Image (cartoon, rainbow, N blue to C red):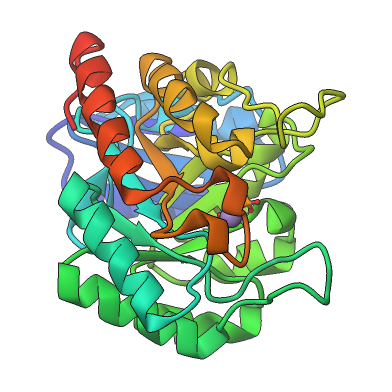
Length: 338
Ligand code: PEP
Ligand code: MN
């Protein structure tokens, strides 16, 4: 259930509602929207009709049920959509956000060259994996803490906040100290202990869709983070596994407008992992923007042929610059900016 408060409600009145909700054995989450403050009540669904009695209060406008299984992620709690601040860069809203950089940090020279390339082309956030989730234990696993340090230094130099993947909840303090946004990769999309742990920090989380998670399951994964108290979640569609093997994954662009209907969380698209083929990245990036995505995640490497992971899908900086020009044109056509 959500309790929608009247526009001029006071802090004391919000506190009263929270207390009454908690007395009914629900957890109360205060969500401050642009026009309305809402108290979302989550818990096992008992005593719903008692919550409805809150409508008798003069400062309560309505008490509404949230029928879907995801409660805090539901569009109803924040109809205008969430905007997530990542080191001063906002995701959500009219302007698109582009996250770009190499699949993995491989050396100082490599990450610095990638940072220059993506900064020059107009990206808003720099990415790079330091702890890599690889299918084979014999493959390059990332530069780990050293890689994180190199990414941080590159981001500082080009003045872009950084995004990087966390795999192990034990590393969380290190990531909180050095990264601006923590990515949960497709392979950990339903690692509930990691998600819960990320719910107890305030740093924004980029949650990627698992390769076989349904959209409802994807939002329930986000709900794990939200329900622990971290409201800063951005969703990323990165392709799902289907019978088709001509591409690495099948980029599910249906997900974009459907998620935008179901949730207030920003939705970005990763056509690099979604296709696995560099020549398909720009066309699918344009399609994603046309479908209503709030941003893109694009892998960019100064020399993709020499990349230690995901070489075939990474763009050279020059091609990324061309992608950005085409994205700006499509953005304009659909009422967005870059
Ligand atoms: C990545 O972003 O480099 C990555 C490993 O992505 P995914 O988890 O979507 O495969
Ligand atoms: Mn990758």
